[in-house]
Length: 235
Image (cartoon, rainbow, N blue to C red; front, side):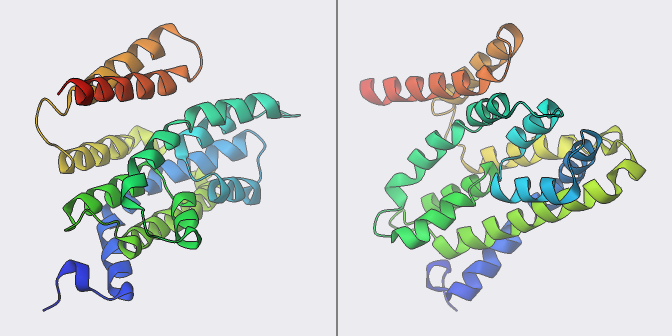
């Protein structure tokens, strides 16, 4: 029987897709809420589907939709989207050591499809692989599945969401929280390694409470990185 790192590309794609299936299910209510909110703000089904496909980052899409007016303040929306998505700089940097030797024609599509969940799956898989090698086809199977699910159900939400109403009243908004807790558990290395996470969380909460806008995302991320760097420097 072949081990995980001996599987054929098609088998790895399938394995990644299956690994992402629970997360895809958690995407459904949020994607539909995004689509429904977009229509309420005057965005068409095609437009919100296009935005979901090009800017594959749910948090910034909700920000953009809630800021959408007629005519839209494009500069404000672009700046807020950049701010919320700034964590992707750090996520991409964390993957850099695992991407050595992979050609740019593969790396660029992989980074385009990177979201919080696909990053976590790919990162955890790389750390588990002998030689800490990035499992490209496993990651692409997961990332493509997540992307298709998000774009599809965003479009469906735009079409039928207003009829269904607010799906979060059924408690579906806990799906993302549950998914992140499971992903974090897979990367758990002990209390000491979790200190940057805790500091980042507390800083982000403080920023959210006292600083207007989405600056808490960037502040929490940068403080967490600085704490991790200082710990590594003096360890």
